[in-house]
Length: 363
Image (cartoon, rainbow, N blue to C red; front, side):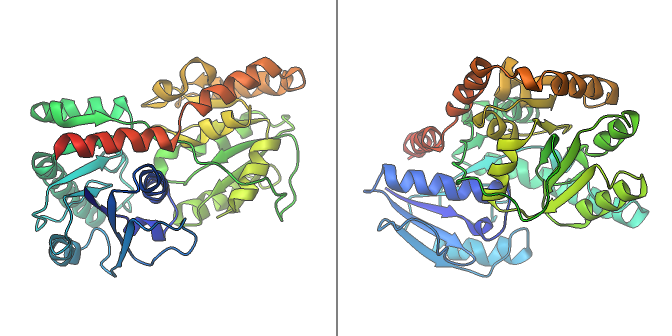
């Protein structure tokens, strides 16, 4: 069996790049007799050596017209039995059988365009094309993988005819390196927010809560990617007079991330929608509490171990934060171990085994 894998996203940070990397590492180790033809922007220098991986470099960017035409021709020219497309955008010129992974409906539900009529019209056009391409690609796919049952159910609701070809496979938890103290000063106690700063992440509720609790001594650290959204939020925090309590660290290393998990009072995820939800599981892997908005896939992934609040209620968040701070000194070792045990259930090896089973079923 020879599997093609579109891993061009591996050249940038984010959830889909990590999905590609971790899945390829595990699958290529689990099945050394299976060949993998992997498309990348640049051959990764830090990837484990694998004799069953053939790397193919291409400068064709994702979500471009060249992707629809030139990439399809490149993929058709490879001697593979099946392609795995790790997102929704499949070249319509692709003729080889494929499976695809669909992560979430955030593009549809939480647009990030500028607030003017031209941008709104352009987004409507993109939304129409997105829906058309998604339906067409689901129709063409041999199988569709979603990252949670929540996303699967959303997809089935819109494409009932495709129900039998859609399978939910949970993501794994990547092993973080040894913690290393960050280069920036850290004030304790602190709550930690991890992930990008797109609007659906709902970070402004943190600002509102901080303003409602001026006497709370805890600090906030946002570990996020530097872009226009995070820079705007950092500026807003300063304008609200919160710069003494709300701090931003852009593009921090995994060593720094591990240290922050290890020392935080709790991880806070106020997001309005998640296809899966990695940061709370990472916090659990360190035995730390996770204060999470009860929405989308998060109850499915975290179960009763998270401390829940409504993503629309700053008062609920404030109450949970106060309770967590008051009981931080009486942190239960047994509960910490239960969190670690829950996080350990989510492994990339399990994800890889389930994905390889999909490949075999459709060939």
